[in-house]
Image (cartoon, rainbow, N blue to C red; front, side, top):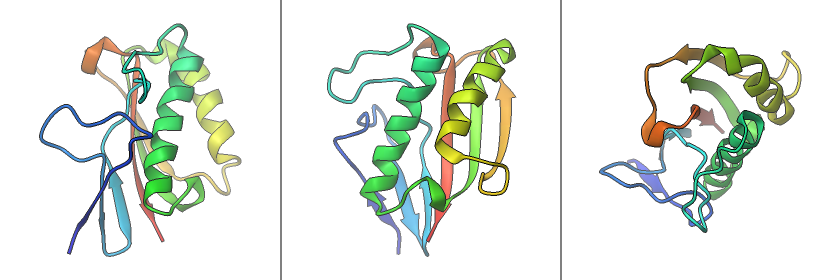
Length: 127
């Protein structure tokens, strides 16, 4: 049976989807963008601050499922400009550490993202 994970500490869904779904010990998060959960404002002043907000939103969802970044086994990163990759990667690495502990990942440049943000990240985690 699947369990829907929700938290007020991450942006509420604005459509027919959940913040995350837990099934058989696996957590599948929806993509998070840099929306501040309390104000509903985008935090896109610069790509590093934007990436930190995305990661904080994902951390809130993981916490709501009694997990943390150590439980993440796969991430998907969508960027609007691959030129931002190094800055995004620097922030991302600060949450995961070394290659020995980091999850599998793909990074894909896309034509557009929700609300015209620069980065969106989703995760799969397992206990």
